[in-house]
Image 1 (spheres, rainbow, N blue to C red):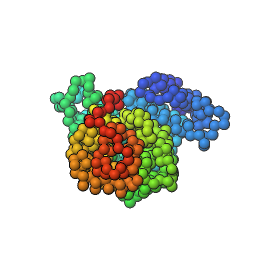
Image 2 (cartoon, rainbow, N blue to C red):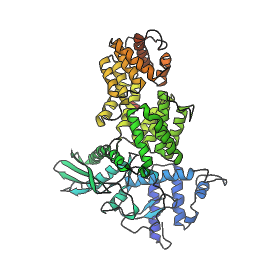
Image 3 (cartoon, rainbow, N blue to C red):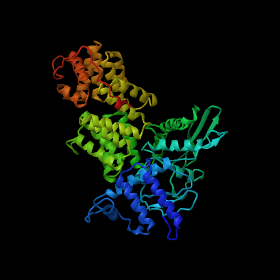
Image 4 (tube, rainbow, N blue to C red):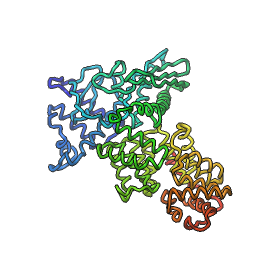
Length: 555
């Protein structure tokens, strides 16, 4: 914050910086929160920092009446979180060396003003925090400024640009906490973690340009014991000067995907870090356990995970990622018919409520939007679901799971031109991710009459506890004339999902599968069980025609 004896020149700098932020396209936030920022900055500059309270912000900025109670209405706290994230993103994209910067530290609404390479004004007192904050539950990564090597005459700022791009790419993975560029520059050269900043991993490296090739060498070191746990060398042909930033972003995206995607380097390292002390990583551990379940869809993991996530959310109701994971669990309860009656009689409504709360708490969380998309899909809100998936993917474009999810949903709509390239790209990036999305390949091959390929797709899913996989295998076998094997598959489906066969058509339509696909599946089932146990039989056209492509969803 500004000292009482601060110069008029420094106050002028702060006001100029405020004006730059408010007018910048990189500062993506509502007009109300722009007023929020202007209010707290002006109050501080005018010496009225003691008036910057939740009540005054609510009444003077947000238009709440005098009856506002900050203990009952969390609007200021929620909006302050959004404002902090918008400021951080602004400086990630637009920071300039030497110019004063504005921040709102967690735990307060009073802004601080800091000029890099100058003393803070004044240094704020550390906020006492008895527990690790939500963003701290996962691995904390400091990207050290990458070192330039060799003659970089045409690209004098290449190393700094690459550092920024790596940080920006990692920040899109919400299960990892990444320090911003200013922190990277300030702490990157120190051996420890000064000023109480906690660091679990340091990513360092060099950038070298030789003739027409960029060489990037990267090293990930665990801070606790200085052990190197990962290294990678990336080489790319230098494009024309105008597209050098695109090349940096491409390299950074590959690096971030390797490090931070589910089952990546940091994921496995975090599992080791849990060790005998799960309490310090308790929230993050539940996310890992959810990922184990989501990868396998093992029915035996469902109820224990649901109970654990319920406890986690009860202990910390603002843990957005836990809320999102719990939402996806309840969507699966409706999807696979699991009993959750001890909590709710309407699992899809509950899933949607949890997801909406997660989005409200963390609007930039791809996981929250992913959870919302799944709940919307099974609630029959197909277009809203696809829009939510697009938002999730825009927030985290390097995550193969989101690409696979979107491709899978498009396959259920028979939009093959969208679905198949997405699914192929997703599994090329991460071949060992959950096999559930391979059902999209089954739909494609089954609809096009390639029944052997459809059968192979069901075998690649590797989810023996999921009834629908056995149904898909059975209908492919039916079309191949292997009726004895098909009957065995249908019996396994009936055992795992009792009571579904007589209403199979309704169950398939509930999953938003295209009616032509539903009709073809029912026809194949009736070849196996012609006694009518599979519900009413639809007339199937000689050839199933795909829906008209929707390119706006394919983008």
